[in-house]
Length: 342
Ligand code: AHR
Image (tube, rainbow, N blue to C red; front, side, top):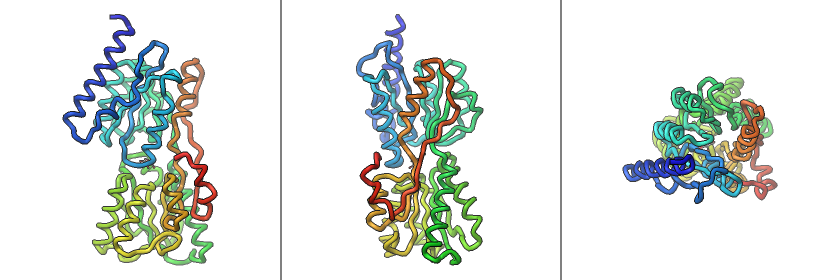
């Protein structure tokens, strides 16, 4: 079998093996597993296997679409897109499949930082370059080519700075401030970094107290159920601020507050803060439901493409690339909403 035919056979084999997984697991949508595969294979295309976390948030959808729009045959790529379906085991399996297939590059967006030593070492030994994006992996960085993503710790610090300024503007800087912290997936860099940044900043204020802290996995549904359960438990009779580690969880929390007749946002009582700065967050800021969203940029594919082009040209690359991000609150949301890309 010549090289071209062998590669084509491998692509079919991996796609078929994943279709097999899909039929035994009703939650998996088969087309997503092979979405992005090029209709025509040529040796000129750079073959990229991309392992995504899942579909936990609207941020994630914007991030996925960015990859699907960037790594297209017309630009010289064949993308094999694999939805991790919020399962680390599934992501690791996908990594081994892609190594076996000898793709030209693997882009890994890990759900959690741990559990990657063996799979990424195997990729390195097999000569398949791995580029990590969005969240990080807790391994020796010599094992992968580069990481591209957000400074999550910095995002947490920015959120605290915004709250400090806001309370001062409101003349509430000396009040006791009770905070509920809704966290994302445990073990994910976005959660680790934001939580550390937030706790670091919050600890500097003797009059600020976290009255509840828990995980809602970055999903809107869990944001709502977590908040519903908390309100129904009566464990936290009073609170001033909800900080949610992404927009979707705060959208869910809003529904729970409404059901319990609690007013929120700049037009209400509870100070509402989140991360991502999705288009819908801008709408909610303009509508007086959300105070601020600290930006997390999902559009990573452009930088990754540049990194790949540098590697193709045999040039040196950086180990880490941070995206640029801002902070948007309800006072400026209307000025920016039309410029937002996600
Ligand atoms: O890792 C980035 C985070 O993951 C985003 O903040 C969140 O919305 C997503 O699901």
